[in-house]
Amino acid sequence: MTAKARTDLRFTLPHNERSNARVLDLLNGRAEAVEMRPNAERVDAWAKEAANGSPDAQFQLARCLTSGAPLSADNRAAVKWLKKAAEKEHAASQHMLGVLIARAQGVRADPEKAVELFRAAAIMGNANAQYDLGRALTWGFGCTVNQREALMWFRLAGAQGHTTSQLLVGKAYALGIGCETDLRQAVSWLRKANPSHNAEAAFELGLIALRPDNVNADNAEAFRWMDEAARLGHADAQYHLALFYWSGRGVAQDIRTAFRWAHKAALNSQLNALLFLSRLYERGETIPTDRVGALALVKRVVRLSQDQQAEAILEQARLRERDLLAVLTLNETMAAQMLENDCADLPALLNALKSVL
Image (cartoon, rainbow, N blue to C red; front, side):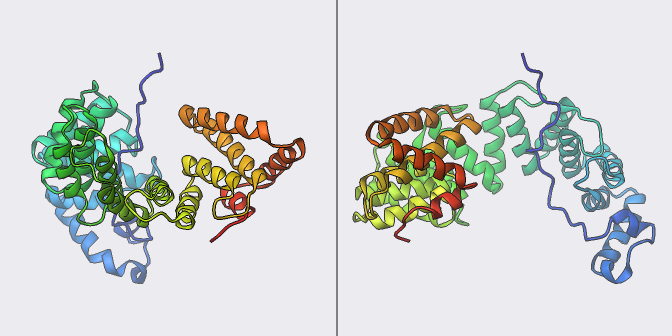
């Protein structure tokens, strides 16, 4: 059995207010005064207040000190200040110290200690800590997996306006993770996550509007959400939008627009969109038939799905490859292999094919 990871870089630090120069250089009088002038007075004030025991100042100073280099002196100094503030039950500091420990950033990795700090801050109502505690419980990082408890913490964070937590609560209710499936609750939470036009929330709302177990299923509603998510750059939504236009579900059929959205999704490495494009090229829908290009696209999906260990899409790609090889000539097959080999990346391969863009 593989040992559990001692670090997880998916935990992220609060917004970092560092300037271009290192904060320790500023405190030691080595930074350029002009370069640092916007933050110099604040950092100096925080340093004095931190030395006098203010947990708020200790937190702010630590947040400035954190650096992307895990073993830097700045990170070690940040940990020192956060420990002082955490001892005073300063929730934001407890959370941030937990993140640094989870990332082994300026301190030794200790997943159990990180989760202990997340829990302490979460109990005190810190939304970021509630979110990270939920994620730790979801992943089994420093604790036993407990999806029901994770959902509880995500709900608490979401109630405070934590958008990603609202999204996770919505997905949990949609899929029955840590709870019974409840599409009404799912929609309610996903709508909370979407006022600022959250692409993932819009996509999930679109999926729910398509579900056969949804008594309020509505193709037009699903199209509206997918359109919003697609325009925000969500690759899966772009692929689904292509299918809407191709099939005429929820919108007037428009094969050219279907091609354009599938092409956008493909450029974002959406593998189903690549397979969909291969069918359009094989059949000559809106574009001249290009069986060589169709097979080249399928071969690229095979390669990418192998790299990503995406077994389901690999199986689909293998079936498409077999069907194409059964109808293509040997010269076409060789040309497709050469085309796929010669194009180093997806944009190059897609640009090599005929288009209606």
